[in-house]
Structures are given as structure tokens and as C-alpha cells.
Image 1 (cartoon, rainbow, N blue to C red):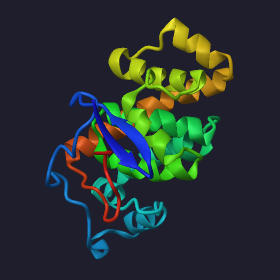
Image 2 (image 1 turned 180 degrees about the vertical axis):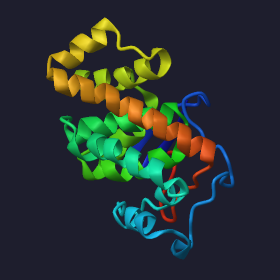
Image 3 (image 1 turned 30 degrees about the horizontal axis):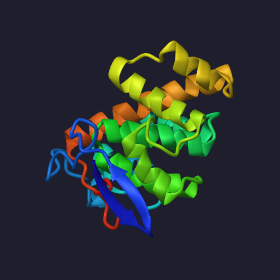
Length: 206
């Protein structure tokens, strides 16, 4: 296992390329729109409404298909802003999903959001090592295991469901599954379209 030192802390990095890696494509297959003047008024308004920190390329890529972007944003806004999950829990699920899907853009953006949601730098890096890494409390480990089970089998096992049910309502359990599903979908798009990291945003821990 590889390690690195950040702020005096040891960080373990999984060596498995099946669980993490670099941006799949060095150039976009679907180029982001850089000249907004070519867009109609509705599409320009969509872009103005998606300003979220440094996230640029994902929306400038998806605006190539304005109707898709408009309809997807409704669901995406629920998962990211309006779900019943605590923000910290949500970001654990999202980051683990991004790592397992090898979606470096997703990881980079949500590492920023996760830190603002209460996760430490050390915890964010440790997400790459999964639920069995030393240091997780049992519920955090259950969240990571949930993301792994949904990624691998598209099913939450009984033990993981029970562990999450000890704290979560039925609505929160549903939101947890949909969070992993949403960001699996997003990872597919980011990877397949070749969305590149935004300027100043770091990718996977190395």
C-alpha cells in the first residue's frame, strides 16, 4: 500500500486501479461551450443558474444538450441541496462513488464540498481506502460499505441496511440509495464525455 504525508499525517492510498485512477481521457469528447453567445437565451440562463464554486466544465459540457441539462438539474438539485441526508454523510457516499467509478472530476469537486460539509482532509483521503480502513466509526464505515455494495451489486445487503436503519428514516435510506445512483450516472457522463478538471481543482489523492 502506498502512503503519503500531509500536514504530518499518514495517508494510505489504495493501489488498485479498479478503485481509482486518473481522468480517463486527456481531451474532451464533448467540448465544453466556451462562447456563450452561441447559446439561446434559455441556455444562457441555465448556465447562470448553475454557478457552484469552481464547477465550470461539467455544466458547459452538458449545456450542449440544454433540454437534458434542464431536466437533470431538477433531480441533481434534490440530491445535492434538498435531500434528507446530513451533508457530511452525503459527501461520504458521493466521494466513495466517485472513487469507485474512477471519476476524477467528481472527486475533485466533491472534495471541496466535503471539506465545507465537515469532513477533514485526512478523512477525505481515507475514503479512498474504503470501509475497512482504520479510523472510521461504525456508521461512517456503513456509509462507505453502502456505496461499495451499490457499486458492485446494485443492492444493499441486509447488514448494511440494518446498520443505516439504526440512524436513518425510510426517507433518508431512499435518499442514500439515490445519491449513489445519481453520482454513478454523473460519473458515467464525466468519464465518457471526457470532462476535464476545472482550473485550480485537484483530482485524486496521489
